[in-house]
Amino acid sequence: MTTPAPIQMNDFKAEPPEIRAAMLAAARRVLESGWYVLGNEVLAFEQQWAATCGVAHGVGVGNGMDAIEIALRAAGIGPGDEVITTAMTAFATVLAILRAGATPVLADIEPDTGLLSRASVQRCLTTQTKAVLLVHLYGQVRDMAAWRALCAEHGIALIEDCAQAHLATWRGQVAGSFGLAGAYSFYPTKNLGAVGDAGMLVCQDAALAEQASRLRNYGQSVRYYHSELGMNSRLDEVHAAMLAARLPWLTGFTERRREVARAYEAGVAHPQVKKLALPEEAAAHVYHLYVITTPDRTALMRHLQQHGIQALIHYPVPVHQQQSCLDIRLDPVGLAACERHAVECLSLPCHPQMTDGDVQRVIDAVNAWRA
Ligand SMILES: *Cc1c(COP(=O)(O)O)cnc(C)c1O
Image 1 (tube, rainbow, N blue to C red):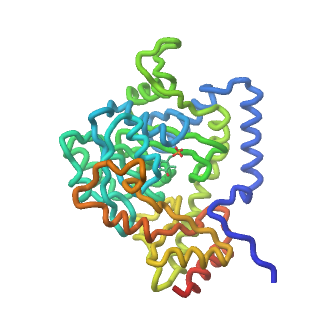
Image 2 (image 1 turned 135 degrees about the vertical axis):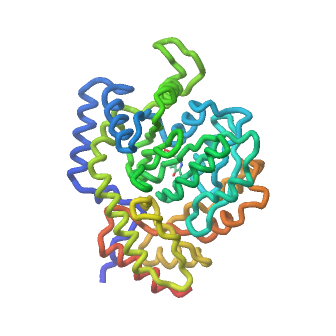
Image 3 (image 1 turned 90 degrees about the horizontal axis):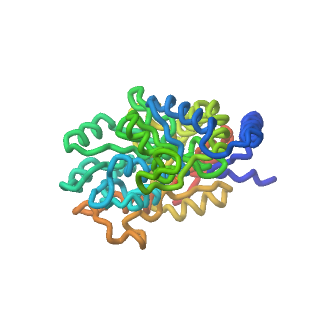
């Protein structure tokens, strides 16, 4: 008997040949245009992605982390200002707050979703609080009316980290359109990924978008005139063109992620394996990651590996336990749910190129595990 091919967390090489052809054509178009930075490809993709998100403006930047930093800075949030966010996120979320010169404050999560807890955020509020940076973790958009109400009540900004939530909608509204600004990453493994680093800030407000486009380009207002100190964080033409070429596939790929997740919901049944809560509506989750929890994660990972199935942890070390972040202020009652999730969470493969056979293999392997 031959051993079946391993099932990876992502498999770009298995993408349809048509998508590769479209990307190569886009790259060729840029090469032959002779214009590589901040040109028509970036403009076109900014408009497409902003329209996809249901907002007026998109500002293409170098990566998702910079999109967050620029969103904060453009909103006038910096030194002396506190930004509340989750410790259960990609490190970039918190690093972006620090890079903006602001002070991160870390709140706990809801154990059944992994998402930021409003009760914990309430405990973190001070007179210095200027924003909640809400991470749509794993691709889930949830409780947005409540988040907007909380931020409005306290007169603080809602900024969305949408790096995992491309096309996630809640009551018909797309991630990135709920708050002051949304920050997207197009890192290769994200639901819409470039062949390198790329990101975008989306927002409704024209002045905010203008400020963001100055900040990404050295703080330049008019050519050679620098009204402030910005960054060099521009989306490259070649990435914009290739992302636009991939965009027509995103809806189908997202639907396939949901099918894989539905199969896991129906098929995974093991006394030691817990699933996260279902989304409030099907469209509110785009399954960037499909995450389960189990008290004996190391054993399950080893078991899956023996069956040729890759599984990863998002995230094993919460931000407040990182060596470089030990002095960040936390919810005064601590981050117990976050710490427990970090020990128990495991992401099963969930990507659009998985076959039904792959999905069944993952389900069978999990269910056959002897904990
Ligand atoms: C990937 C990611 C980022 C950072 O995006 P980069 O493009 O890698 O800088 C930020 N936040 C979350 C939640 C992410 O998953």
